[in-house]
Length: 187
Image (cartoon, rainbow, N blue to C red):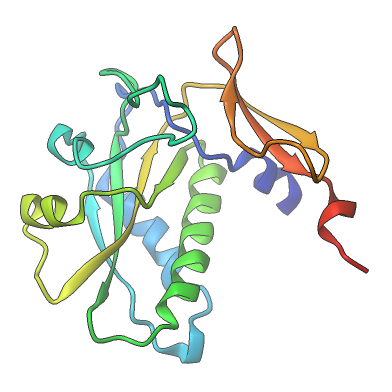
């Protein structure tokens, strides 16, 4: 069952914007992150919830770097909600491990309930921080955009030498190249 959940958990970049996500759902997803392992159990991460479509925050995000001719989701395809992952400026380097674990936990939880998401690291952090009035003692690590997926994502198996850049085909389906298991296991 976890394999099917992982296979359905893709980086979705287009959503059915008409379908909202309530604050309790976002809290439930953060609760999955809260319950996940934390390096040295330091629990440094904090979260900022945005439960309404926010075009100003959307403008702080940069989408799909490999798709050079695509500026991101159009109006109607934009995320319904966001979870921003924050850390205090003075925390240990271990928060980077926790961030990955938290993202995976929240996105698997989102997938389980029919949502999809995309982790965004290309963010105008200063602008987003001012816009949302996030206290300055925290830095924005990542943004998770969430919504009901409105695109097809296909996993393509590739060899070690093939190009890993995702792409869209003539039917506008999103293809994600994945190296074979034998390529990744070295012994």
